[in-house]
Image (cartoon, rainbow over all chains, first blue to last red; front, side, top):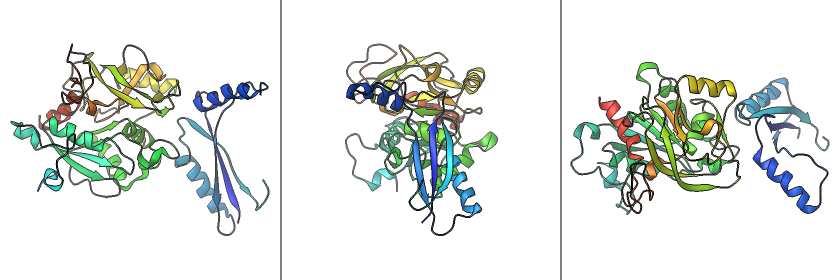
Length: 86
Length: 264
């Protein structure tokens, strides 16, 4: 079944406390190559049948109303992926 | 039949209005919404009764506001804070009624959101901004001093501008954020209702603890006035001086404010 992937990221100007905590933990396991971490969310909306333009539009609507809060988050991706691939 | 007939009174549970209550205030019906995961709904019900009003318990899945004169959206973890705090509750059937009634011009419904209730109000776009995780990353639970910056709202009229109060603060996602233009608007229009005093506990922009909409009928705040309404069950301190152990009742004014406003 095809899936629509929605990626949501905290806005660049919003401090991301969870990302900051992860960035602080990386050196503790010996990984010092990263200057920063930002943590987002990935949603997979499964579609029963073909992904029509109307369904894609519904996914975009879901992305900006329920899945993200435009005050603090950006929708960075709404994209169809095939069965096994990216 | 009243709500107190329906359940066995518990210590700390909803109590009947205090003896000698003002009959006019008693006629004001304040709804308290319960979502799956609400925690402080019973405390809010108690606060309304201790202030002299009548509390009406509302269920988020209903479509009927039961003709209440005001609504409180209480603290807790509605829908487990899944997705974002308040994000799913905002679409509850009763929230549609509340959003419409709260936006209704001159006779708009007074609505107070406490903690998770504040988060629900921002997700519902009744109030601007949003809450993110505390900058310390810790859950904070402590008695917090606030300054009432605007005593002109439905929920603060019983205080004076600049008056300070001490009420409990307890949350993980309490850092109020908004863009600078929104913050300037809030400041310019007198819509910053409460500000943190004696240190900013969570990184909230401009020390903001609570805000209102333009009309002043919708107010949201992160700290918990409903936990500081009855001597013996409140904080150990008060902005009014020494009160003894658990003697703080500085939060009661929030609830008497809306009752008197609606009667007056």
